[in-house]
Image 1 (tube, helix red, strand yellow):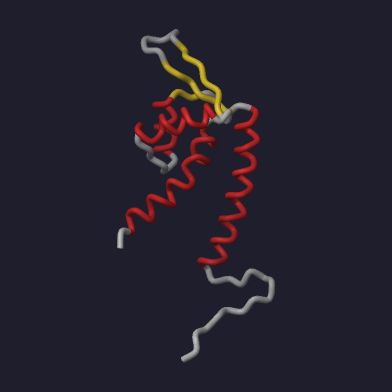
Image 2 (cartoon, one colour):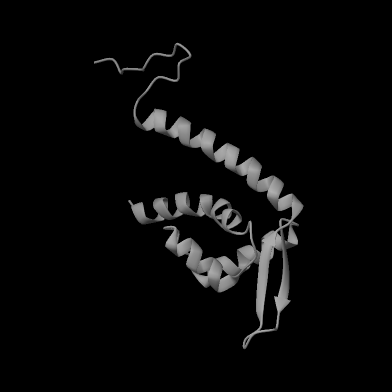
Length: 120
């Protein structure tokens, strides 16, 4: 069994939320990678930049080039739609974490369900 693939699938599922959480203020790609890495979510360039382009095409992000420094940098930030999506995804994430915490801790959901026990 390839546990690494399953863990990667789980991580990939939260990458969009992680990226959105870090783009509440303007960041260029490399600084975004550093922030994600510092927060425990390292991401490869080959994963991050296509995701940024896709989110921008979907209207979730805005971007602009800054050519004032030594090297031109493309900065990204949340659009109004991106801020709405971040709020929606944050609420969904927090609900899912509560559900998973209960499931992992084997705590009943509080709706009267009983645990199923196989017949012996």
